[in-house]
Image (cartoon, rainbow over all chains, first blue to last red; front, top):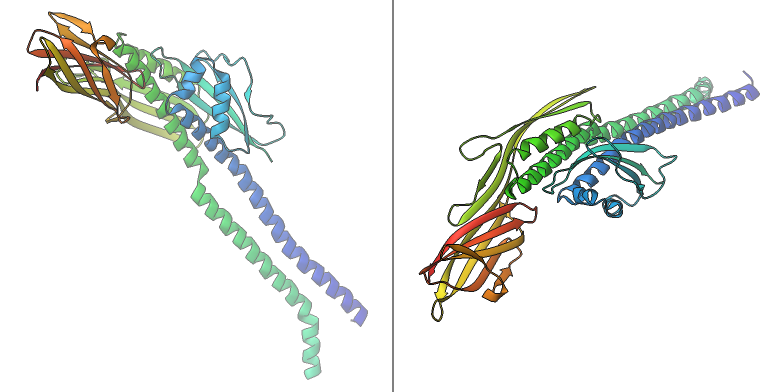
Length: 140
Length: 257
């Protein structure tokens, strides 16, 4: 093997070494992406916790009873983290949509969306039961 | 000899480089996998989600119990609890986030509870409005097969005690202490209405009776007012609505201090 060929082999070997190291980075980054997908489950959990917080003293049911959609949106906006945008739909016990206005703090388009189903029972003496669908996404 | 060793070292240095790179790659991958597994173990999002879901359903059941008790305590039928729980079960059946959900219940019927509701307002010194039911929640879905059983009791209790001080003629100054409890803990009252008994009829107490109510903010209220009754005892009734809208009546008899 002459000196010129040896030099070329050194370059190929170094290239292979760099390739091996970078391939490990590629595998690692794929694992991180899988973990991000898992995080959508956490976002759903955040949404469920937010609805439970609003419902703990019967506020959520009361707002819906009085069709106070502004209060629903504002209180949800307060309870959820700043970087989370949401879209909420309310159905009655006959599964008919009752919110005539859009309850949202921004568009969800383009982002990964987590969904939450929540059964809301009002505390008022005149019992009413609602089904709430909450969609959430993290704003980049 | 030395020259050939040097030559061998020079020839194999590239292979050593690749082996070292492989070792580094294995180390990076192993560390990343370890960190990922560790994160997955601590988060376990699926278990957490189903736990949150069950908690949310319990919240709805609790609200249904409060609504039913508020209705029954205001003169509604006691069967309203079963009717409302039926309605809730129907809505729960349409939740499919974790599979098929089914909520079964049994309202308590015993010496105190009738159709899951107990209203005891005639005892001296305290009044109770309570609802009690047992629940079984079944969730059957892909990878989820869960049955949760539990009991739920919603109770508002009011205690009242007091005495009077004789003023001029038949006029008496009555001092009362009223305490409100919601599910065993101190709770606030939304409204307290008082009345006293005079010659067989119940007369509402208002500002003309110099009514004064001091709210201590912890479910304790001290009440004072003046009444004109000829008898040596004053019978007082308190109608209390707690913050959840549940009604309780409590009666007491005040004697001269």
